[in-house]
Amino acid sequence: MLPDRSRRTILTRRAAFVAAALSATGCQEGASPRPVEHPAEEAGGEGTPSADAAPHPCLSVIPAGKVEIQQKIYFEPNQDVIREVSKPVLDAVVYVMRQNQYAEFEVAGHSDPTEPPSLGDSRAQAVRAYLVTKGIDGARLRAKGYAALLPADTNTTADGRAHNRRVEFHRVDP
Image 1 (cartoon, rainbow, N blue to C red):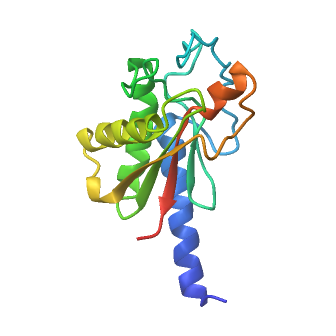
Image 2 (image 1 turned 120 degrees about the horizontal axis):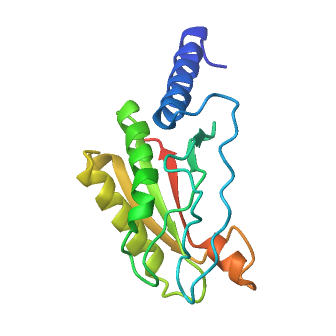
């Protein structure tokens, strides 16, 4: 068991992390983000976001240290080029990282089995590079590609494969 002072420090930092995530996007604690419909898939691509997608997504901070974004990061089909529509999502992530300047993060890139195994890593590197251009210290960011090793959904359907093509942000201990 941790001493009371250490426990309070951890809880205070976690609360600050949550508050930063909420204020970055105008969300209120306990409020659900606007639902975002999964876009129709383009052949081999990342889809097109729906017209009613929120420009600044609510972020949820999971106690285990994962920054969960409520919208997908979109890339050009079979490339590591971030689409413009995803930049506000990444800007909200930048805000949270700035508010937690001593935290380190892993940018995890995932792909599906129909894509080259290196694409997940290339996309993670592209997101890391974007965050660095926005002022996040590169030493705080690790980019890692997991290819199709950790699917979040089935790979037997187009919707499942689209769900598996994703970027996640995990807080890691230095």
